[in-house]
Image 1 (cartoon, rainbow, N blue to C red):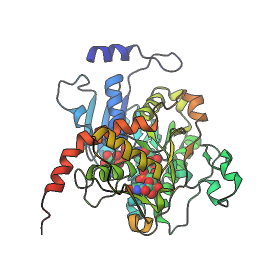
Image 2: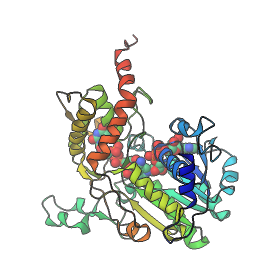
Image 3: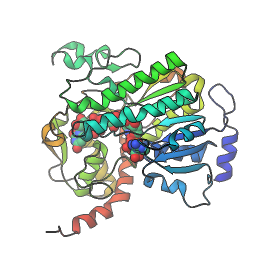
Image 4: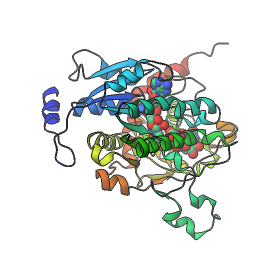
Length: 394
Ligand SMILES: NC(=O)c1ccc[n+]([C@@H]2O[C@H](COP(=O)([O-])OP(=O)(O)OC[C@H]3O[C@@H](n4cnc5c(N)ncnc54)[C@H](O)[C@@H]3O)[C@@H](O)[C@H]2O)c1
Ligand SMILES: O=C(O)[C@H]1O[C@H](OP(=O)(O)OP(=O)(O)OC[C@H]2O[C@@H](n3ccc(=O)[nH]c3=O)[C@H](O)[C@@H]2O)[C@H](O)[C@@H](O)[C@@H]1O
């Protein structure tokens, strides 16, 4: 595997036919969901070096140990919190490229911990932008599709035929407005902080010539996303929808549909999305100065349809009967608390990423759920049984 990986890597060329030079990449938030998949890809298929920065490394342990892994020496872990660590600038200076993934990015936090959310997504990202700009280093910054907020169509009357017109709902990087709710709807603290850091990075590019790429992920999902409450995360924690529904399925509980599960999302398989990021890393001339939507417009469902599909897929991969009551409705106030609000619909326009990088997602929603839920069942089913069997302490 080592020799074929390195032989393949040395022959690799970019989209313009030029050989790809090995880079040193400072990856902040490398221990998270996206970071772990990106590290895996960079280690197994390229010759780049990664300085992996995070406060945790559980999701990349398999890449760090043992010492005889084929990529040994190309990935090093630096346990640090970017809020207060003087090593950050030195690590950025040592690298050709910085990728910033670090953020609080679970909706349950946006309205309940708005200060932490704003600090994490704006204030803590400021030094990263500053060090990149001052040291002439390229930055790939992870933003979010949530910067679009709600669609224009959501403000039209329910029966308006214009709601069917893509001009009222497809989200375009260089045209669509950012539409958030009022300040008391603290859900938008995350989107607003992400929007402001995008504007700052864009301005650094315009005024100081900083080389940057901004990524707007549209619901990337797959193995290692978030945590299963009570197993590898807090019992009362609320992760993103994939992990919430996985947790319900593993425990044989009904899946909770917030406000009837009417919101729509497009889900993309993490492995498809990581291909897009690799293209950005290795084609700077095509990626610099751009904001990219990265999603799968063909995988649109309502949250209710997602729940129904996950129930069927989980039953297939686990061999277990679906719960007697498969879903229940809960109000957003009950589920997330005061100040929650929602994006109604998220269809990414793919023109920019298609034109610049020739990227298209490949995996259908059914297929990506099948591989992801197979992983969830294999990883958690036994642990959940033990948790359920444990007597509750009085
Ligand atoms: N997964 C998605 O579909 C998605 C969608 C939109 C945007 N994003 C963005 O992509 C990025 C990565 O998302 P993810 O899904 O991998 O989330 P994640 O929570 O799994 O990963 C984030 C990582 O950053 C680390 N981190 C946070 N604050 C830090 C700090 N102060 N110092 C050091 N490390 C810190 C965390 O420990 C975590 O490992 C985030 O910026 C998120 O907003 C993700
Ligand atoms: O993934 C993305 O692209 C972005 O969107 C997510 O936001 P959202 O899609 O609203 O978060 P999820 O937790 O994945 O929820 C999706 C939908 O499912 C609903 N939901 C969630 C959990 C649940 O148990 N039941 C349920 O109905 C939510 O109300 C929401 O309508 C998060 O904000 C970020 O991770 C990211 O920036």
